[in-house]
Length: 336
Image (cartoon, rainbow, N blue to C red; front, side):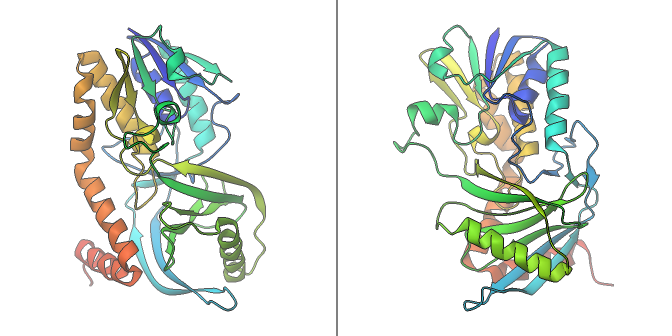
């Protein structure tokens, strides 16, 4: 079978790894270098024992904080906090290095990777199957629009600073009125990714909010935070169904962000990208690609149900969200 993969990031590379030894696979990556530019906080939540291809930095604690912003001077303060022990299930990974390792494995398996090649589904008529791993919005939506007639399904938007800020814990900070959250993610090799994102319900000034957040973190740390670079990206939040479509008679299968698999509560999508690619590859080998969507949703149903529930509560009332988080913590870790 001749397979074209649009996108040489985690989802597309995983598809190449899983199919390279059984299919004629070509991965088309629009950027000149695998792994760059970086548009990710680099947090990895382990699902179904799926671990990164390189050793990650184990993050011991996950801090949820409810912030309040003074309307006059724009200062932030912590109103509530809940801390969870991660039990080794949350890692910080060096994503560019991991993707380069994945590309090496995919090539060893037999997949071809063509960088600096932006392709369209319309131009891939010589292939038996197309895998859309192009991120959000998907290549399908860029060419043909969404199922509901819009140009593409709305997801999320994020702005992130790559900094020298040193910290041990992941911080997810909730701010009333923000349809999203702010975050601090330690990097695998020191420093931290600090960002703000929202889910396109109510636009906000990302640059100004990130500037305010960085200034507050500086004041809390008592030291200047050096910003080494800024990056922005779109997040594939909300399922982009169906996951399997047809251009003429050629199946086009969406995986990772292209399928809208990013966790709406934590914003994590790397393990979902890997899992979706693995399930699709399994169904391709079985000759049952029509079962791919159902199998993925069956596998991750409870995770997404919890994530969407918590996202809805956060939008309704951050105060209520923290009451639920405290209750959940007490149920998992009883007080002594």
